[in-house]
Length: 216
Image 1 (cartoon, one colour):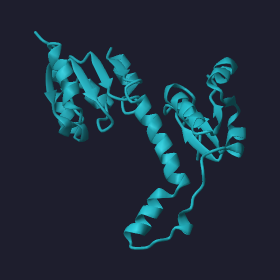
Image 2 (cartoon, rainbow, N blue to C red; image 1 turned 90 degrees about the vertical axis):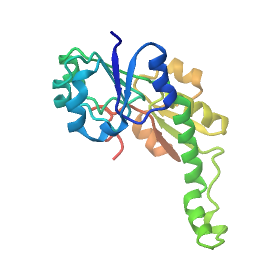
Image 3 (cartoon, rainbow, N blue to C red; image 1 turned 30 degrees about the vertical axis):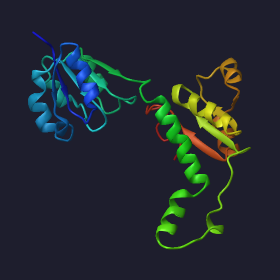
Image 4 (spheres, one colour; image 1 turned 120 degrees about the vertical axis):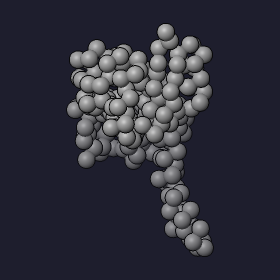
């Protein structure tokens, strides 16, 4: 009998087809991600659960998950899954840490350009029929200092892209070795120094008790 997987969030049809191509029965019901009672009522029928960020896997849902073997988060963060409750049930929790690395890093760079050039404000002003060129001159990124908090998979790509923009890069990451920092051509600093020196700051850390409120 083929294993059954429930997809309770919006997910690409291509991703759903990958399951089917491997002989797995899939129910694609993205409406369940926002209806915890409905999800709890049906979860007992499934061997696997594929989610994104809308679904919250609570102890109540896991209590009803009699056949569940794995929860897969199509993304990096798993803070919407009660991992302690899952462990007690013997349910494996996995994520896809490499799936959106470049997209996320590029988005961070795009946001930095938007801030530097005041693009949202300038767009709103122009759409309002104004032409306030001097008001939205902005600043260049060249020779500015970027502070990267968390220089792992995504943060490391941001560092590389920022260096390509001729920015100076300082990084705070307790897990970043001096050798790796030198190879990345970034300066490893403590958090207080990063906050004091950076013209722009970008945050690329998982949500944990250690990183919670690292910036107010």
